[in-house]
Image (cartoon, rainbow, N blue to C red):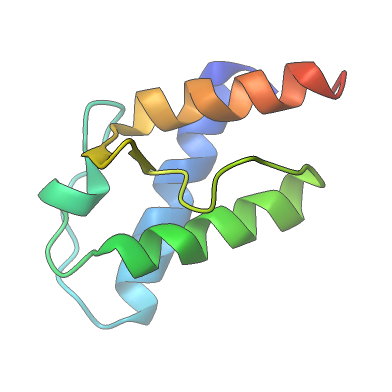
Length: 92
């Protein structure tokens, strides 16, 4: 998958989780930091997204929250880069 495709996937997953949780729907793009910019979205939701992505892409990661790195909230774009690195290390 390309970085752009990964960004689209992450945006869809964040939006779906917001809807499922009954929380406010907001515009999300590659520069959005879900943990900071999406109402009610927290680090536990980041872990949920991570688990879902790992299952969908059939990969393993060395992190348990795709949307946080060294206690810093990541943008969708930065998270997609992390995933792209994981995918390239397994040759997908």
